[in-house]
Image 1 (cartoon, rainbow, N blue to C red):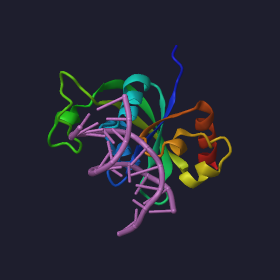
Image 2: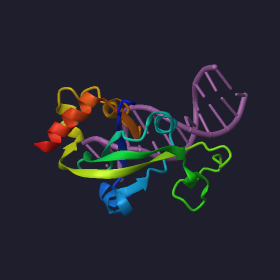
Image 3: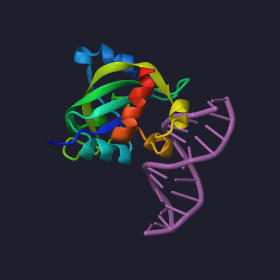
Image 4: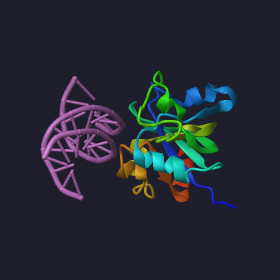
Length: 156
DNA sequence: GCCAACGTTGGC
DNA sequence: GCCAACGTTGGC
């Protein structure tokens, strides 16, 4: 029995939103396009089937966590890297020697109440969230305690 | 639209 | 292996 872990995945809703995920077949999509080594390492090495995901929207007002998802496939090479027509091609990543990885996630539910970045900053127990420490990282670990506080905020 | 923070690249 | 230059992210 493997312990369930928790994550925060960032996206720009103008690019790909939680609603877009909900609209997919089976509300499922590959989380492609991650091109940062720290985020890649989390995806490749640590994210596993069954883990919980907070979907966070950046570059909107207000930046917020808007929904939850579940990981349904362990990491595998991000084939969009060697697709020159994709949004994030990287010629240094090849099928024989993939550099970038992705997982599949399925939307669970939108939050009843979005949890904004300002709320996160103002809530005791969330001050050490990775999101606040490394603002530019797109895949963040979340502790079980942080997850539960956010679920509580979202239900108010 | 600005710009601070910070990750990446590449010359040396 | 250092570090300056550069590019990108993302809150404001």
